[in-house]
Structure formats: C-alpha cells, structure tokens
Image: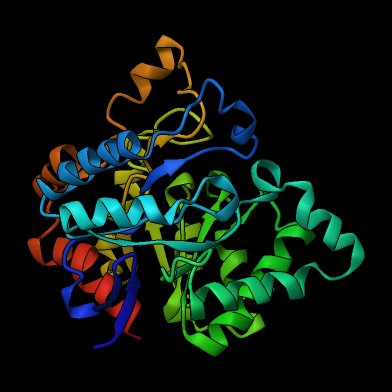
Length: 325
C-alpha cells in the first residue's frame, strides 16, 4: 500500500477507510473576494461550521473526504487543516483550477496571451505538490481539472497538459469536473493520450449523463468515474436521483463497481454572502447534504439488490486502490 497527502500530512492508504470522493467544505465563485464587506470572514466561525459538516459525515462512518475546491474558488487549506485536527476526519485537498466559464480569471488568460501560462501552471502544480501550498507545508493529494459543457477549451487544455506532466513526475491523482456530465469520455481520452496513468484518473460528475453508453465509453478506457452529485437535482443540468440510480444499477449489473465512486459535490459553506435560493430550488436541493447517500440512497439500492461487497468496494477499496497505484 502507498501513502497519500492529507491536510495533516501523509497517511497510509490502508487507513483511508470509508471515503467521499467529492465534497466542498468551503467554496466561492471567483469574485467573492469583492463582496467581503458583507460576506465577512471569521476563522473560528468558519471552522466551527466545517466541524459540524465533518461530524455529520463521521456519523455515517466516513473517515476520509476529498475536497477538490479549485485554487481560485476559495481553497483554504488552513481551515481544512483546523477542521481535520479538531475532528480527526482525513481531508485530502487539491491543487487545480475550475472550468473556463465559471473559473477563468484574467490572470492566466493574460499569461496565455503571453505564451507563458502553461509552463507557469505546471510550475505551480509542482511547487504545491512538492513543497506545499502558500507556505503552509500542506500538500495536495489530487490535481483538480475541469472542462466546459460540450468542449474542452484551449484555456482548459493548458491545465490538463500541465497536470499530466506533474503526474508523470509525482504520481498524483487527477480528478475532474465535467460540466453537466459532458466530455467525460473525451477528458479520459485527452489525458491518456497526453500520457496520464488511467488508474490515477477520476472523471467526475458523470451522473450528469443519463446515457449509460457515455459511462461505458469512459470506464472502458481504464479510468474511474464518480457519480458524485446525489442530492443535487434539477439545477445546473443535474438529473434527478432516480436517473442516477438507474445508471448506477446498470453499471453495477455489468460488474463495474471497481471503477465507481459515489459522492454529493456539496457546498457546505459559501464564501461571500450566502446565496438566497428561490423556494422551488430549495425544495429540489433539500437533500443536498453530505450524508444523503447513506441515509436515503443506499437503503434503496440495497433493496434493489446492491450487495454490501459492492458498497464496500465503492466507498473503501476503490479509494485505497486509487491512491496506492
């Protein structure tokens, strides 16, 4: 077995235990920094909110959470470290950037025009992986990548190529965001063609696609997929949980449990002011919490024939294999 970086330092992969592959403790869309007069920051207050979320997960037996918050979306590793230290929950953080439409600030776009951006992105990845993030010594366990709906833009490809270079040197895991479940097969193909190791790739948000052929095309390239938006229904192109469960049952019926992760992609604390959701949206998102799968989805899956061995594979054995290979 291998070792993986957490916000409290290296951890033996045998100790990861039950793992949620994609949850955000703290997240803000780029630009939140300009609204901090009203969207105030109090470290202790934010820490306690994070501790409450961690306890909720731990009540369901979760021992490890991957928090893939991108660099420009409010990643705060000191807060994650404080939550982990208080609760004992293992938290794996990321280095990486969000997709162009909701993440791209002029910073790397300017450097892209100068022709220096891709090399600088690679240098940033390597510095954070080898020496730590922003002088903290805390190292990421994954690189977060993301693509747009229906395309991987030239801006996004810079991050993909730089990430593959970093993976070749360090063996770090690559975890992606697919916008509305599109481009999963293409993400896998692009990364593998650039030289990435398939067994260290997780293609995320694949539950946004309801055509099982998209999942099969992706899985058959040897990567992992994440059906990781349970509870997020009817917004940002997300299908209902019933559609996710239908796809999942189909994939499990074909024996793909060794390549599947389940999670929620929850945002538990927003940077800036809390968004005010319309009542209809609140209703759709009432179960978008990091214990939803365990409370509501797994009981239904088990009634439909999903075995304890398959559940164990998806929540424990896959994470150990992903970070050990």
